[in-house]
Length: 342
Image (cartoon, rainbow, N blue to C red; front, side):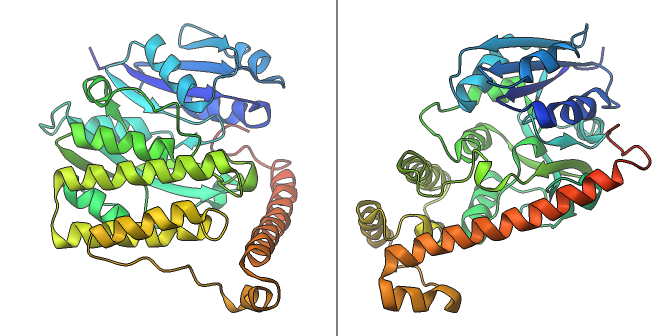
């Protein structure tokens, strides 16, 4: 028997995207699969829509709203797969994504091998997804993978991974405290429990950019800012358990510096913690610079107003680009069916 792969989809207010996501899961050429959808107390038609897909393969469950991490934990508790494919309710899998990764397992890899693949980002038109390789798009040891992530401010999208049940159980549940970067922290623990990462070329995922509506968007939310710092502290601890070299400590400092833009100046308490930790690591954290577009606001009105202007203008720019892409998507849908059946 081929191993069973469980595709786990947490869904909250995802009515507008869920059809396409489910069709991409059903279209997987790996035929021994189950699809588990857990509705996390959605206020729109997510649950009713998901139930139109129920079958021997697709199972739908619902619960009161508990957040993304708790919903993923619930989905895992309900599944039976030998391998786990995490999939957010607005993202898409390439048709042979799972098959390519499972084929790689046939080359004498153990259940402790963590499989990754290619991912590209898009807004409304998956056909325009941009696949931009990073230093993580290759097979790496645990320490090297985490070092590169922190040095290069790189990451792998949630659905790009394929995880054995053995690895998932060894890593433990998703951390329900984290409102942001819960996936980054979770896959660090999966990585630590693994034998290393095997990158599988051609195993593609399509990541939908949702801007300020995304769960990963931090903005000015104190709870998300605090969750981000907690995740960063955990990242640093995880890397230092694998390697505590000069390079590793420098990577930790660079990692913190890259993220100071979300803490400074609103959360000077966290900025101070980062400065103290960086000194312990032999480095130094500085206040993040503004680009010339916002530096004049800082000079005239101060850091806080400049930061707020930056967030507002970035959100406005994203909204304009998203609106344009959505209109083009509607025009394209009047033509031939897309690769995902919509």
